[in-house]
Figure (cartoon, helix red, strand yellow):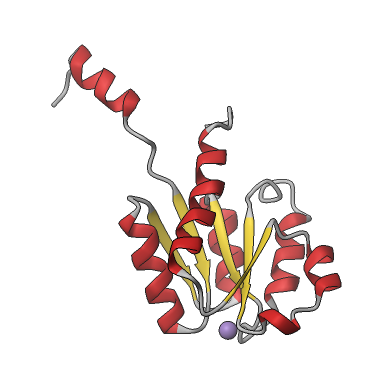
Length: 145
Ligand code: MN
């Protein structure tokens, strides 16, 4: 359709914007679960299986949210988070750090890496969706879009 009618234009304005979430995770089961849940909320997913690919995808695509595993095959998710939070182009992207070592997570390292939230795995599904939504609705109100 080459010309948008006012009715279509109004419908587009009311529709919540689809967001983009980058998952940096080497555990395929976690990636599959996170993806399914995020896509079920109408959002788009990018996937990286290591930190290097994650950094490249973050810089290239400027996702609305990043889910970052701590234990990755190359550098740690803490280090990848520090890197992204140190760069002007990516520092405003919220990052949720995830780890299976929840009870043993290094609280100082979590604070120091600059992540915006921490989530233990295995996740609790309703809590995961609420957390994702809280960040994506926050970015929906940003004036930069
Ligand atoms: Mn891992």
